[in-house]
Image (cartoon, rainbow over all chains, first blue to last red; front, side, top):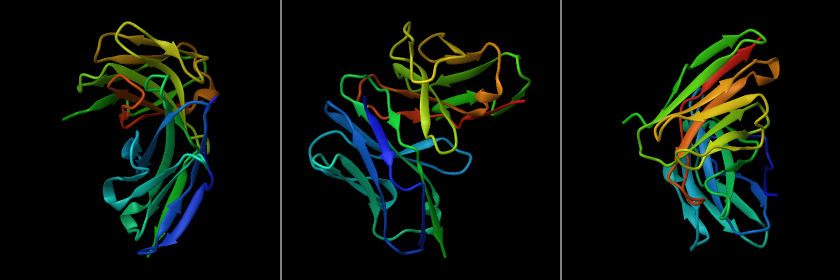
Length: 114
Length: 113
């Protein structure tokens, strides 16, 4: 069965510093990978997705993620964060034979301090 | 451009009461989903509907029922609410297929006392 682990529950960082949010998954078949962001009291919004092709995926708001099949990882990065990036971030995986069902990680709270 | 609309936004129930959470999407999506979000547990799938006329259980279906009323609407019913069902509930929709991202509503915050 597939599963997703986000290795950090909270990540505090100063404004303009780089950040990496870590995500590992397990699956016995090929997968599609997603990162979502949730701002306070809102639903989830898609940041980026990996479906196939280039392993480096760029998303909205300057975020990018790299798919590493051998390490079963899909870490999210941003070279310089802003206060407005403060939110909760979720990694999710979908197996290619399971329709659109997503399995989510536990979430990482990114807190950007001035 | 409404996207996915959930009602109500907030609800307080007493143990044993019933209620229905409503969800509608205007993106002509085939698939719809109900998730619950609890602190430290991410989102867990309750039920989903791959297409109009079909529904299937997800990871945590006990205590819930669903109805795919038509292509636009997918409701979630709690027949006899329990404190363990205190959570934030999200409805989502997508085009059919594993590579289609989900579009989420803004959630319903439910408290069961």
